[in-house]
Image (cartoon, rainbow, N blue to C red):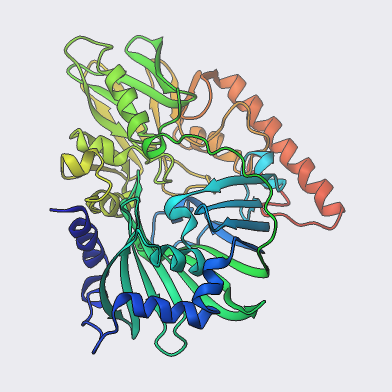
Length: 499
């Protein structure tokens, strides 16, 4: 199957018959439709002669493609991040853009840098620079672009086009105004396989003779999630652009640069196996190994698995305990399933995990696409015991955790080792759900001496609790100071169930 056929297959599966709607009655040729759209925006020659476009505005972006919510339930409230001081500079001649903003979560998180509106900037190339109607239309009309079929979707005329780099996009045109209504493309995701993205353009107004949208909304096909909204408050045409920073090389599917896997023995039959600074325990049973967490990505998960499988001759990892559904913590779920591993998690995660595993990836094939396997899922209600006579691991539904309701922890009673993800990290600035650790320990009568987290480093129980209490106190101080100044941030005043 050719690449274009694969792409079309993914789109048809995603949108069903609605996308594959009837061919436009007596359609204009695709180039004529695009040129008509260019005229409606301000004139083809005028658009082609533009060197740059700079927009500013403000909006919100969703956390982790909608995979960072409190609960895996599709009706759980989204976690949004505010994006202010947005400035996006398009170098139309080079097909690049520079995106700048200041973000802060509209929900409490652990790092001060995430709350204090730290500036960010990144260079966008390829598909990332084509989610606005002006560069998208210019790319569709470029001499090296191959135009495809014309069809209709929801009364919009849709033109398929493939740019020189080989990426295929779809541009929808309003038959009344003749201006672009949306552009669509496919990208790869470590958690979701192929993702169909659509950027919608609304509220066209004239700026120096060019009609441009002041409302920009982006969504993905997974759970019909809106991933970003932007309110444009200015456009400048042919503005002088500052030099763009160099574009860093990116690794495949979330690979963390030069990070490597390491294994440190913690107790008899227990190792801390990390990829960079993230990981968790690997535990030995009579005839197999069990790993805690499939974190970050396919590359990170395979690195940990491959190292774990060398720890005990003749024994390999056969099951993975996943602490919770957040897309960073389940970033290696598809990779683990591709290896045929059993997934152990709180029962409420089964639906979302099945959705994640079932998604195809014909255009950006990952290990699961290359080696399809069914999800083998073992649910945890309140308590699940893994015990073969040589090792016992208790898996418990965590309580009191307001960051993730459907989470589990694990406990190795022989060695008094507590295994957790997102309960604490020794270097967090603040802690907004600090009571969850001791609430869970006390609920199940545990007596931990060592904490092996997904993030950070192994610590003693005393060190863990001391860090949490310091982080809670810093959160309370931050809230008191900001509230006294008249600012009320999410999570303030900080709550602590141990009071």
